[in-house]
Each structure stands twice: as structure tokens, then as C-alpha cells.
Length: 509
Ligand code: ADP
Image 1 (cartoon, helix red, strand yellow):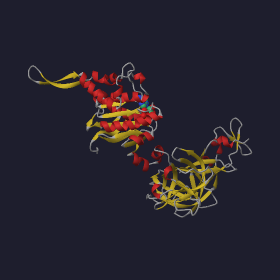
Image 2: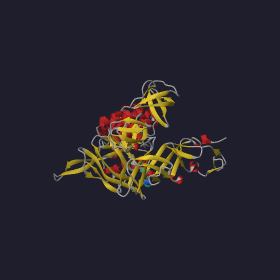
Image 3: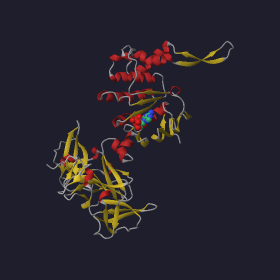
Image 4: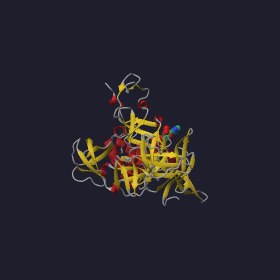
């Protein structure tokens, strides 16, 4: 269903270049007068989508409607759409006025005339110089360049040149203006000023703006609606506030603003475990569901360590601080997890602090579990990986391509440099099919209790919780029972290890 007042509707639009899909099943309705921003990292398909709206590319599949009419294959010059590019091609030998008037001088408009036979016919004519004057004056006023119309392009700043480019695009009075990273070539200060001005222009013009950027702050500042994209697909569509406060997944949360994102497990109704602590929350997810939790740095409240540990409170040690003008940004270690927090109070590195998070500020997102990821594993002196306090035999040579273990247990790289990995922090990943269970608790490397079993059509997904409340998830053909105490075995080659930080700090002199 199209939205009311919909000006552009993209329906199942895809674009494939040489067998590579760069935009996939894109569905979006844009309302008249809306400021919509396509936001995502470089290469995610933003420009391609914009170019299809402009008519510079034809979709491989799907259609594009303008005011309800199919324009998928209509050439750009027949669309009431204009584009402002990052690299604005102005004519350096013409002044501001002539740059803006250039298109108008070539343009022909239809008019009606009575011919000799007394019939009404439609003819084309050029615009009069008075009409051109009026249109140029209006466009230059909107971009705030009305005083500079006689200036040579080469004497203008980058920001002023970009405004000329915008004036040239709006002088034709398009219904839609497409802007492809138009501020990308400007320095930071100019970019900030132009963001505010563009928003003003949008208000004055009252037309639809479709804007492309990879800069989340720019998107948040200017847009009515943000479309967050990843690998040619829409992740989320919403107002800046929606997208900031209610990201649908960890990708969006990460892209929009600085965030703390943690692997977490629902422990009970409205209770979630992360940072080794059970927090109250307001979202209702099934018990034992694996989720991602987002906490914004500004929502972490720091206080002095006095008094009781509270429900939604953990304790940490300040590891780093940066002064950000109005507030400090602190990196705080809570166990082996980092928490980013903002606070106006000046605190010292090394201080212990309480971190409080209101339950309303704990954003929970569904997670598709595809493997087990243990982010606070470490290597012991026998080169085993310790997960949830249980040692697992693992292949540590994968931490350094081309390395070997010598007879003393040091890792030796191809140049003969030795590394002592004892206590090295690592991330350990184990596939869902790489874990074997046994009811003989002596058999495996770790033990735990089965807390959840879900039938997945042709197999069971079982969750085993250790005493330290870490969860191992596995797919199995066998049926187990909740509360069974089991042991876990994993083949050394099935544990993927990644070092945290630079492996060079473990060089053994
Ligand atoms: P973004 O604007 O998000 O940076 P683009 O839409 O420019 O992304 O590009 C998306 C992907 O499509 C990129 O991988 C890019 O290399 C590819 N691509 C864009 N245009 C073409 C083209 N004409 N031929 C082949 N591949 C292209």
C-alpha cells in the first residue's frame, strides 16, 4: 500500500551489476515534502538507489512510481527531479548569475496560441529575460547568495560554490531534489553550517529532498526520515529519534551514534543478563532468548562507590578518559567488558565507580544465533582457552598465521620471534554443530545445566548454562531434558580464536 501523499514509491527495486546484486528488493514510499536520507557505509547501494530514482540507472527488477505513475524507464530529463552531486560541475568562466541561469536559457516551455485557422495549438518558446531574472533571483535568495550574483565562481569559497550548485538545481523548480553527499567536499565547520542551511532551504522550498550520506550525524541533524542501509538492503526506516532510541538490530545501533552493545541472555520476564549482572529491563522477550543489548553512553550514570550495590548497578574501574568539550567520555572496565560512559564530572583514571543504567535505557534487540561467541575468553599457561572458567584444548597457532609452538610452549612466528600467550585475552567462537554433550560429567571440558531446548523442525537447539552463567548453544539430533547436568566437548580445531588487541604485546624477550 502506498502512503497518502506519496510522491515516490520504490516497489521491489533491485539492481544487479555483472551478477552482483547491489540493491536488493528495496521497498519505500516517500511522502511529498519529506526530507529522506539514505544512510549507510560506503558501497551499501545508496547512490545506486538515488540514481535509479533520478533515472540515470534502470532497475534490474521492480518499479518506481512518481505520483502513482510508473517512471521506471523514463529518461532523467523527463522527470521533475534534479540532482546535486558532491563534485558540482560549475562553469568557472561564468559568474554566479550565469551559472544559475545557464539551464534556463536553453529551456523551452509550452504555451498556447491561436493559429490562423482560429485553432488552439501548443507551441514551445524560450523564457524571456525577465522570467529568467525572476527565477534566478528567487533561487539565489533561497541559497542566500543574492548579494553575490556578479561574482566569479573562482572567488567563492567551497560552501558558496556548493550553494551555487544547489541554486542551479532548484531554479528549475523540481518536485524532488536528489542530493548525493553534497557536503562531502567541505571542511567540518562549513559542513555543519551547510547542514543547517540545507534544512532551512528544504523548509522554504517545501519540496521533497532525498539525501545520501554515510555520516550518521548529518542524517540525524537534517532528516525527517532515515533509511539505514546495509549491503543493498534496508535495515530500518524511521525518524531520527526512532532510529537512535529504538534501533532494530546491533548493526543500526552501531551505525547510529556511539553505543555499548553486549551479548546478553533473557533470564526471566523483563530481566536480562549482561556485564555479568542481571538487569531489570522493560522489554518482554522469552526467557533464555539470546539478545543484543544497547546502552547509550549518555545513559550510563556514574556515581561514587559508596553504599549498597543496587539492582541495575555494576562496579567498574576507569580505564581511560577524553575531554569532549562539554562532558568527559570514560572507558570503564567492568570485569573484562568495556563500557563507554559520558559524565560532566572530572574523574581520574584508576578510580572505581558505580555504573547505573535505568531499565528504560536498556534497549533489547532480537538476535539470530548462528554461533557461540565468548568475548571474555583467555589463554592459560598450557595454551588452553579458558571459557567460563573451564579450560578447552585449542589451536593457538591460528592467532598468528604461519606460527608454531616450540617445546617450551611459546608461540614462534616465521621470523623466530617468540610469544608468551599466558593470560592473553581472546574471543572464542564455536559453531552450533561443534559441541558434543555427554551425561558423563567427567567426559568433556566443561559442565553445565540444560536450561532451554527448542525444537527446530529437524533438530533440537539446546542451551547449556555453566555455573558462571555463560551459555553454550548447540544443535543436536538427540533429545535431552531441561535440568540435565551435562558435560561439553569441543574439538580443538573447532574453536576459532581472535586475539583482543595487538599480539605484539605478548612478545617474549
Ligand atoms: P554507496 O553510494 O552506498 O557508496 P553505491 O551505490 O555507489 O554505494 O555502490 C554499491 C555497489 O555497487 C558498490 O559495490 C559499487 O562498486 C557497485 N557499483 C556501482 N555502480 C556500478 C557500476 N556501474 N558497475 C558495477 N558496479 C557498480
